[in-house]
Image 1 (cartoon, rainbow, N blue to C red):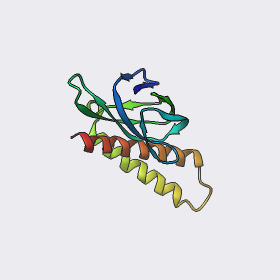
Image 2 (cartoon, one colour):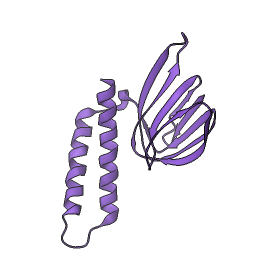
Image 3 (cartoon, one colour):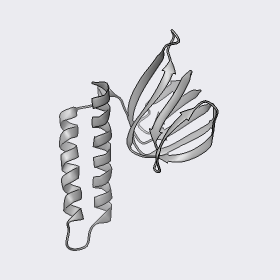
Image 4 (cartoon, one colour):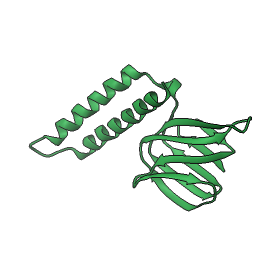
Amino acid sequence: MKLTILSFDWKKIEKDNVFSITLMTKAWEITVLDKHLPLITSVKPSTMYYIFKDENNMPVRDDLAIWNWVVEISNSEVKLLIDMLVDIDDLDVDHLQRARIEAEKAMEKYKNAKDKVDMEKFIEAEDNLLKSIAWLKLYDIKK
């Protein structure tokens, strides 16, 4: 199976010999195997991983943190178009932990507001929380 990941920040991953791909859609987590039924669905901010065979024909797992957008599955090919693609080398854990705490505080503030809630700010805080959790999970997986 072939995997192609393209992000809006121009990072690109192309892998052949992929055995499986596991990622979180807006509805649930899916694992894609060769000859999967065709599917187009949105992707949730989360971690994903894929297992491929290296040059020695040994299985290798690679984990990534991804952000919103879409996945297209057709027969033996998976294409992901995503906002952001993060690998372990790109992470600043202290900054991510602070960002997670700030996002949690912002969500709590908007959740407990007695008057009108600014839903746009609440959604932005929720997105920031999901992003920082996915990045921290990636760090925990790969450290």
